[in-house]
Image: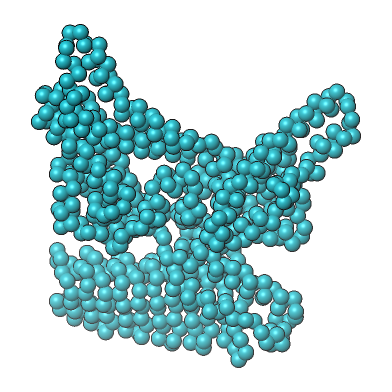
Length: 610
């Protein structure tokens, strides 16, 4: 379409507006080619200005929004995050002389962490010029570290070996500055190796809005599957949603989930048909089929609610690839949250950090007290549990031993206090009560966990990722709370499912004098098929509902213990604490960054979970 001003519109039109893909050539010479939505540039596109500048990347409502590359007519270019036509977030600015400026931006100005990379004849020199901690304007737009492509742009510069010491000494004025650069380089290497910084954008995983449309669709699908024609609905699902989505919903395949769904549907339809055609003849109990109907409906509602509250990215992936057993376990609360899975904890912490605008680069803590070597290893290695999968059981056992040792120590202190009142052996009692000399050997290897020992200068200045520390806190809560074994819920489920049969049999047995043929129904195969199918449905669903209730109680208890632990991390008088509260070291509250991270840990503790 050509308008009166000389502008040319070309593309897909819908409701008299450009949609999907189109091209817009202005009369002045500039033009845009890319995606449209309701007449506005939204999606991916290329924009060429009449002054020689150009932009290529993501747009929203005619504005640069997301990742994009802007090139100026003089050769300068910027690749990074954009917000409302402004450079905002993480980006790389390349000058026409070859110099590179990598760092954070706000309203198109340099802001926060910057890494100027200066082109010279010897090597690239890396310098961290400024770090502004926890400014709200910065932290609200710090999600770009999860883009792999940005990491690929700056990581080669971090990997440069800083040689040519003579030129560096001349540049910075001495050995001291050179050492500082080396420390900065090591710190940047550590940042670059952080899995949190090299992942794809997980923003869609972090913010979840209930999808009513998807909830109703999944509810209708499951009601049709269980209440209408059962497994034959799979053919209809193939036509509507495709094989991949049908597989991931559990209607089609060869896994345990698909097997359970198929058996459930067959049992329910069998019991309904038997009751409809043989109910009066075989004197089948309507209460059993009624319980199965209600249980199946609740089961459909739970699944639909789960889909309605799932992240948008997971729903998109359900159409694109088949989920593995590991993917499903990450989603099943019984598998991933009753007994904590390290990958699940990492995902929950990262998503909670994104939701609460917590910057990963500054989310670090320092300790006033000395920590054990094993604890230091776990807090220093982002992939400790991935590289040492067998260590998780060892860590759990060490926590149990440590808590047991604290309980023994507490009892000894009470005994010593009683002796103190009796004024017996005062010197020895005072020594035993002196907290700073209290020690405990864990196991036969005599590794000592000491309650408080002041750290040396290097240990005091050592920073640890606070999210790894929070992971350890979560792991300890699993040891603190006593979980009921699954066999308890299985027994209750069996008893619950047997109740209708027991009541029916008791009623028939009590009426045996008036009804001489009371036992006839128990001799018919239809009765036992009816009973077994309903027994399976009621016991299966009741067990899973009980487990959901148990997980909710576990979640509440975990938050309770976690908040107690966090509160006591800044309590210097450790004698006031309970035994299990002394496991973790004392956070350095005199350090501003550590104190802010402690506050963020409290926020995350309330947000993490189902």
